Length: 158
Ligand SMILES: [Fe+2]
Image (cartoon, rainbow, N blue to C red):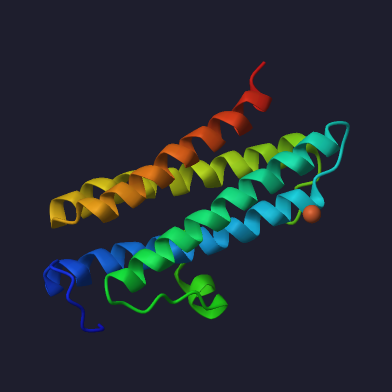
């Protein structure tokens, strides 16, 4: 860890960096998955789903930056390498068979819910460790992820 005048104790920074790094790997994977959906969706709702998945991709790209820069703010090294991401992401692997809108919506909803659950747990963990600002980063991402899930699931409702 890098030296810093930041007044958060080193052991707290170390613990929070581990939380952030786990979510960095997940969010880089999630970002790629949203493009996967954006590129491959087919069917009568093609255009609006193509746009929706790209909009979510853009928001997830911002999560990646927020998480990575919180790691470096705390004196850590943000590891965004694809090798690390592939090894450490806990997210479901995106199906290559998904074709129609419903299949993509279900795949995207499942992975957003999975990511959202992990981020929600991070809010409490970061707060318990004593880093309210990192808890706030996770809270911001959590709120946005919940909203994305609502947008996606609204398409699946009868
Ligand atoms: Fe595109």
